[in-house]
Image 1 (cartoon, rainbow, N blue to C red):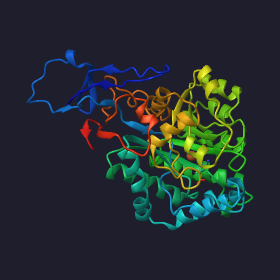
Image 2: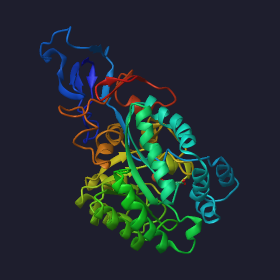
Image 3: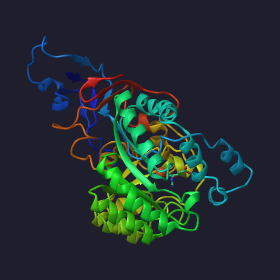
Length: 402
Ligand code: NIG
Ligand code: FE
């Protein structure tokens, strides 16, 4: 297959530099990119052997990567949205047994088929906006059976939609009611019973912990990181979202892939991330939906050369937003990322946050042929406008899927 195009975005680290190739072309063989460059330089090929797609002057980017979602869950929390509008805070609702725990009840009560049916429209919405790789976390089961159920559903989604799913075990997301007042006992269950089985059955690629005042403390988080390391799973952390507990520095010690949220991250934490080559995953949807005011330290992350990814954080409590394009806009309007930084955040830096930086997120020879073709005249349009969908074609592993 060959693409003949106006502009091909490759990767972008520098501001306002998309690494674009104007009047470009790209060739695919066996699901991989095998050539890209100026269309005029395209090696000769026999038209009968090749399926050619004419990009008609549109822009081609890597397929987008949503590197942080919780999109498999039961029920919804519209009632808590109303409660927050009547004056209750997210933390108050969580402490009164709502929040994550109310989604745990609904998720435990749902069958695999029900969870699949409710997750499918959410994942379809992302896919239709150019997402070819998505990360999905567990964390609403909080016991072995239900965590496994969530991870299996996440795996089934990959068989239904042409999308690559990376799974993350988030057993340490909240304390289930049966372990009330026994957080250490629950962490032992996560580390000694759940994690070994999940690793053995290859149900997850990574392990995540909600390290927060309303989640787990540093000592508990470290136990989970140790267990993840022992079982060969990569590490991620929800940290510094609502306060600065130092979860990021701990994650850096364990060579974590990323810390996600990071609104309250200190310069010390940023230095630790930089030294450990971690990615900061920015989640503007949760910031917006919780009406947070503490901005993530974007300028310091830039200064210390920490890669920034951008993701939806799709979940029923803090980010019920299944739109990667809206996240691009919010990363720019709320967090002041440049459009090129925001686009790197959903391509090469999102790949890095998932440990996929050698296979996904860039238009480069040898990379997976996951491509999105957009009916736009310049890349910044993807961040500038929302509510319309400019995707005109999507390719996953070399196959045209939209
Ligand atoms: O990423 N911070 C913890 N986890 C989710 C929220 C989950 C929920 O409220 O259901 C988040 O914001
Ligand atoms: Fe999250």
